[in-house]
Amino acid sequence: MQTVQVNLGENSYPILLGEHILSQLGVNLKRLVEEGIIGGKVLLVTNPTVNKLFGQPVIQGLQESGFTVTTVEIPDGEEYKTQETAALVYDVAFDAQLDRRSVVVAMGGGVVGDLAGFVAATYMRGVNLVQVPTTLLAQVDSSVGGKVAVNHPKGKNIIGAFYQPKLVFIDIATLQSLPQREIQTGLAEVIKYGVIWDQEFFQYLVDNTEAIKSLSTQQLLHLVQTSCAIKARVVEMDEKEANLRAILNFGHTFGHALEALTNYKVYRHGEAVAIGMVSASRVAVAMGLMKPSARDAIEGLLKTFGLPTSFRDLQVEDIMEKMLYDKKAQAGRVNFIIPEAIGQVRITSEVPPEIIRQVLKEQCLRNGIKGQSPAISCK
Image (cartoon, rainbow, N blue to C red):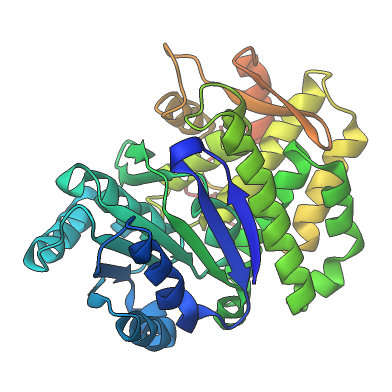
């Protein structure tokens, strides 16, 4: 089992990584009981698919370590990451008589992790949280760093908090159960780390695409551990996104707008982020901040892993307007993460709207029937 430490003073915690280790979660949590950090009640928040695949070894391991376990399943899908779903989890937590020393264990993808984390942060003004991510995207991104939230119809993750877990427990064996599309959406966030922080890691992805696609244990462990280590370093320097941590949002301002405009039903999060990274890279070239060759390298790697680089049938002005509702907008000005080279980005609100419009028009594909006009234009 490998460890990546997130050093945040009293909010510090380990990320434990391994293969076929889910049954050992209880043993590792028992150590926190012995240290007086947590109590013996666990609320396991998951979804039906994940619970069917992985619930038994996790629950059995927790019970054998002396925990009382209550399980609650939430529906699968970004559209269920809402206050209404959170209210259902609050009800179960109340009925299970959770107290402030109890533990919410989030087992699943980003939706489960974000929503369960939001519940943990707000129930009784905060109970202990443990993340057990089972998708690639959640393992490399959303489970680390303490961002928890639910969506609002006007924007993604608008209602949330910074709330660090006590432990992140990653079993890469869970990735073998994922459909190809879910692996691809996680790879978007992996590629992001190379662009914003580590040129050598980006080149590693370029040089090892076939091995990565094969989901070999060695490759997966390296991808997850490196991504977690990069995110940990960024979070350590800026826990609550006062400045530097915003670079983790590369591609997200555009991507969140696409997700919201399609009611979170068309694009997986990583797919929307992939399109957003292309948007930001093209803006960078148009502004003279990055060489076209770097833009092409980013787009090429995304395409190699089967990720989208364009979108269909959305109004450009609707995307522009939706970005103004992004939670990172300040005084009506949107901060963009713009790459300057592979491994280096800048945070700026000084992006000419006409450049954004032109880039979005170039990325928009019309989705019509032969001989007929498309229902929605890309104007």
